[in-house]
Length: 179
Image 1 (cartoon, rainbow, N blue to C red):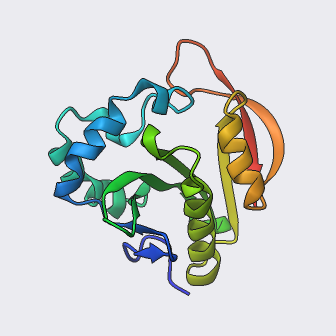
Image 2: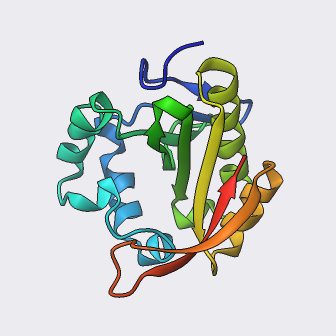
């Protein structure tokens, strides 16, 4: 078993690959970040939303953010072309209890194709088979039924409903998930 954040892994199945985000992904990232429908159920302060220049954001992804064990963001790609179709994120790492949270977001044109479910399955497999992680959590806005289905398909259980600061004017009511 490897400690979390000891590597930038490549995770893949027969259809998708989660890999390091690279400079050629900048155009797709810009499309993702600028789509309000993609981010309507997500916190306002996500890492990629902090930069206007996607090339700079890509450079920063594997710097202090990764080295300080704050977040590991991988690009989600279809294997039949390697074009970026979204982001998969590991965040909220708590080494002392072997816990991490996961999140994901896809370009709108890739919604409804099972990519998010496969992404979460790859993330779970990696965490439980290759790292010391024992607890995986996720948070979703109550209204985000698509993410609810993705998490349920992957064996997550809703544990509670809570209010959290996601950067909006008012706290957001979210479902908390555990696996």
